[in-house]
Amino acid sequence: MSISLGIGLKIGGNGINWDAYWATQAEVLFFGLYSEISGGQMPNKVIGASDHLTVAGAAGSETYQCPNTAPYIAADIDYIWFKIDTTLRTVTTAELIGYDFTRTIVKYSNTSPESIEAIMILNSDIAPTEVNNLHSYFYLSVYWSGVWNDQGYLKENRLALRAIWPGDDWDVASKSLFIRMSNLDENPSAARKIVIDTAILALKATGLWVKFVTLWTTAAHGIESAKLNWIADSINITDGVAPFFTTDRGFQGNGTSMYLKTNFVPTVNGSNYKLNDAAFGVYTRIDIDESKVICGMKNGTPSLTYSTYLFLRDGNKSYAIIQALGTNIIPANNDSRGLFIVSRNAANEQNIYVRGAKTSNATASGALENNEMYLLGYNGDGVLSYMATNQIAFFFTSSKLTDADVANINTIIVDGYLNSVGAKI
Image (tube, rainbow, N blue to C red; front, side, top):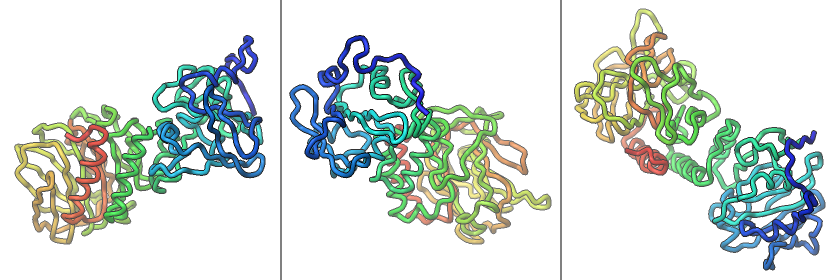
């Protein structure tokens, strides 16, 4: 299927020679035609240029390499022509027609076999000014630019979807996450991909990644991306009563009705979260003294009230308990901002870390929770209470954590990811 939705100018339209036009634009670093490939080279038609793309392979399944120079490295913010370490890549025809790139513009036919007709690479420091004509001349997808464009096309190989390039230099978990974000029409920028991938690689290097059940960086670039579990495409957050969302800051409650459902139930999802081997943590951004629960759940057995919850700051103290009937851990605390982690390390040991400072007690565990964890409130057998007004930038559940684990989470997530996006207080 090939549908053109626009009335943009084509070759010869209105008497304009578009091949010559693109070759004279300051925003264009490279512009070449498939029909002019000769001797393994696609020559650069930009006025004054003398370089080329190197072409190899059989017709219809060619491979391409761009010049290995600073301007091309700077232009390649999608990391299609180069890896993150600037190592030159060999790019395939399938890659060029399969994805939408920010600075690499590929013209290919709208029906199978989607033959390439032209390739253009934009300069790194000049924004494209001919967005409508780019869609029209290059037969770009209606969503190439991230928003619907009437001059674009419904491409047979992707219809109305925008296909973000995940890259082959990213960790496999990063690639999966980028694709999931793309499927929500919340494509991460090249800079954000680096921040996310750096965090994931560090979590794996320190052994933390395999301890997590869920990891939500709610300080995200989009409201739906903020609900994604980084660890796997499951146990994603859904709205209870939708809280306020601020880009790169997170979700904030109103103290009366707003909350989030994590869809995390220990008896169902507790592969790494067990009765005497469990932890959860949250990073918050508002300092307020209130008798409110930032996260919590209660065991559903009527005769028992085993609870898991965290009060950040209530009367200048924190209160926390994890899968127990007994005494809260109650450290002095006069600031409800920062990283709070609660960990059940043994049948008679529960710990709380308030911005890295550890407090413990010997409260015995009771039973693994069989209710869902809520954020910005307490799930008491399905009854919402203690709704908080704080803002959550990060939340996780995991197996028990050591002091070193807590320090690494602070370094990787707080000083790393949250600091990079501006969410660290």
